[in-house]
Structure formats: C-alpha cells, structure tokens
Image (tube, rainbow, N blue to C red):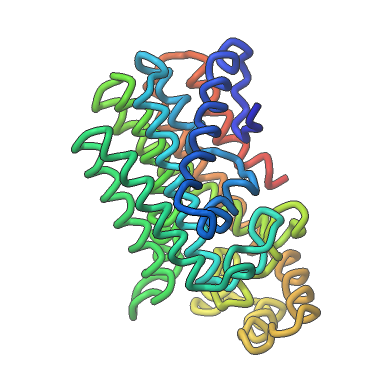
Length: 335
C-alpha cells in the first residue's frame, strides 16, 4: 500500500481511498516507462524514489465530495503527479541540487540535458492523459503549466524595482506550488460531478495550502537534515535563492529594524561566502536561531488557517475533517 502524508483520520474513508491510491501508483509507474530501455531509467528515477503523493491523494479525497472514484478521477490523479515530477527534474537542474528524496538528483546521474528532457517527457505524458479528460481539463492543465513556468521565471528574475520582496516571494509560491495543488483539489471535484462552485472553493483551499506548505519548507530546510528532507540543508541559500526567513531579514534591513546578528547574517549570505560546506552549515545554524524563523513559521500558520477558512462552508464530514487535518499538519510539522 502507498504511504500517504495526508492523515485521513477515518478508517472507512481510508478503506475506500487507499486501494485507488495504489492503483494510481501502479499507473504512475507505467506512465514513467515505456519509451525505450535507454530513456526509462531517468524517466522512472524520481517516481521510484517515492514521495508523499500529496497531489493525487487530494484529487481522490476531493472526489469524495461528489460521486466518488472513477477512471477520470484516477487519470487526473496520475496526471497531476506526473506534472509535479516533471517540475522536480527542472527545479533540481536550476538549483544545482545534489539530492532529491534522499537519492542523487537526476542531473547528477545523467547530466543536465537528460534531466531537462526527461522533465519535458513527463510533462508530455501528463498532457496526453489530461487530453483524454476533455477540453476544460486541458485548459486548466495549460493554465497551471503556465503558472508553474511564471513562478519559476519570477523566482529566477527576482522582484522588480519597488516591488515588495516578501509579496513577490508569496506570489512565486502561489504559482510554483499552490497552482498545482489547487488543480489537484479542483480535478477531484470536477471529475466526480461535484459542480463548478465546489471545484472553485477547493481550488482556493488548495492554493493556500500550497503556499503554507512551501513556507513551512522554507523553515524546515533550516531545521532538518538531509536524511529527513532528502535535500541538503541550505541549498537555496547557496544558490542565492532567498527563502522567507532571508527575505524577512532583508525587510528589516530596509526598514532599519535589523539587529547586529541579522546584519552579520546578511553579509555572510553572499553566495561566494557559502562555497564551503562548513560555512554553509554555520550560516544555516545561525539563521535557524534568529527570530525571523519564528516569524516565517507564523506566516505559514496564517496561510494554513486561511486555507481551512476556505472550506468552512462544507458540511461536516470525514472528508472535510481530513482536509482540515492536513492544513493543521503543515503547522504541526514545524514544531
């Protein structure tokens, strides 16, 4: 049985959903192979490494608010996970990340060109699946793909002159992470006959969950080791990508409220200063101890709370409880 991150909290609900999640997992394995013997190893690399399967599980879960599971729901669940996997290949190349899910990143094994083309291949296979679900699904998938690209572009290019860097980062998170989680939640409702109004509500929930999730990861990256996260702590810092704690340091520097410790950290965060693993570990440890991390944690909590508020109109049910529990889990894992 697939191990899922989302605690459903209801034995009957789990008994209904987990067999479908196992089927999604099997279809995912089939989807990442089959080109030829040369291409199959890189295309199956990340799927074989495991993962939380958060997005397909959300699709299956939100389908319970309509008529329940069917082949269209399962196809949509596979498509959102394929899309997610594709983005990871590209992200790891751009971030020069050595690890993903505890294993060497694909570009470390096969090189950048193969990793990028593998991501493109998985995007193509996701698109082929979505095409079988109808024109509206294709439109939603295309809009999501556009937002994923825009999020990465905005992150790479940085805020424009006069733009608030914190607001810019939140927009990046909404596009890069929130958009696909929103689509995952939307698809479950859409393909189970739950109706447009409910699909829109769940998409708003999913987007806020996605931002909270990524804000939490900004904090966890500073407090967990590679064995826990599957990524080297401080990878974003080394690549010059400002996560929320760093942005909050810069915001304090801009408004004149930054303390001496924070000023020293900003000076040490210059990319050239983090070339050695020893210097990176020291900066991560000192940043972890600064109060901006608590501020970033509180921001993640607020986004999770706002996500729960979006589903307040839903009638009481085990599905609503599970959606609320997931949003709370985002906060609990920061403890």
